[in-house]
Length: 443
Ligand code: DSN
Image 1 (cartoon, rainbow, N blue to C red):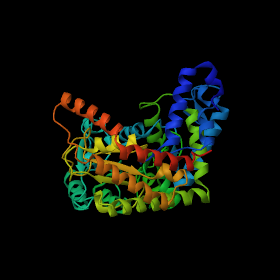
Image 2: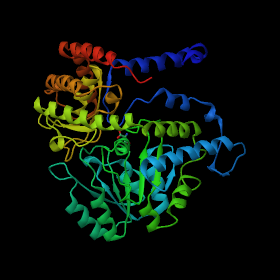
Image 3: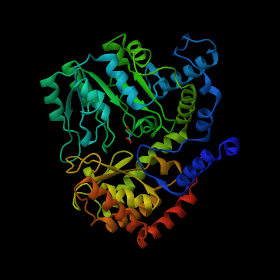
Image 4: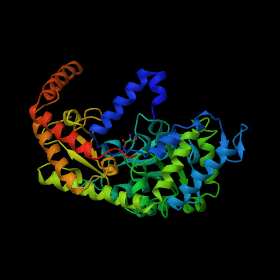
């Protein structure tokens, strides 16, 4: 597949090969990552990338879009079928532009918007203070309770008090099922748009492993590269309820993506790859895959708890879990992330609710099962992986993050030197590589 680039640009070729080797030899356990099929990769690497197609099928600003129109319509129709919605925009470059387009479609500058607070697992684009969503709109964040579930008393009270224009439900780090119906009731009580951001769980919804927001939300946004297992990209969908609330909502969303928003020409290779990925979701295999992601996450969570690892909310309903490291110190997610990476297990440091650390130095790590489930791993492997994760946490639990930028940099360097020679981590790395080699990336 890389024959040509090997001859013309060996420097880039070597780097691509190195990344493929890294993926093959380790376990990708960042919950938002996955391994796409070769068919998706072929569509991404196709000539479709050469074409300009501003506008929408049948209404383009450039000639020569006869084929592109068919491709985009195919992706749209597959998205509509997969999520049971009457309208889908498949041109959005990625998740953050998708969410930004929603604001542009239904809000005016300064309108109040409600979303789960970032440290509690919410997304930057749901109203975080440094993001456009928190700077140009008035943020009204809601939170999770001590038990890790969304605090609905707070959601209702805030909604009644502030009468927001828009309420988000969705997260980057939330381990329980999203109660879309309850959100819809509250949004209706105050006349707000209810937007479900299903980026993390889109594949689970199609597989029937998570409830769908389609009967409840007005608008649904999603990325296409997480549990959906497609290329990097995104979609915005309008539901029947959305069209009942505002018959022009679909047109407003399309216009917000292009030409009113942040986008120019659509990435046609990406659109074709989204169509391919959506086609792959309409199979019994994908339905089994989605259910296995959750079964694996539950097995991994149970095994970790059994080994003394504390999880936010005490488990998971979906594809991810959040390890709470506060019993060992503040801001120590970095040590666990780096040590696991050294052993070939890739996770990410993440804030946990009421984190005493910061978003850059949080006191938790986020772990997910979509990519390793794509490789065919099941409950048996989760038990083994839990043992490695617990052992590595134990190995680095005494490291404490110093205050001050320079002191931290020096300490992290010392930490890296020590962990790269740590016998336990080196021996786990060998076992991880062996397991990874037994479960190849998809063909
Ligand atoms: N970067 C995504 C995630 O990892 O959840 C959110 O944008």
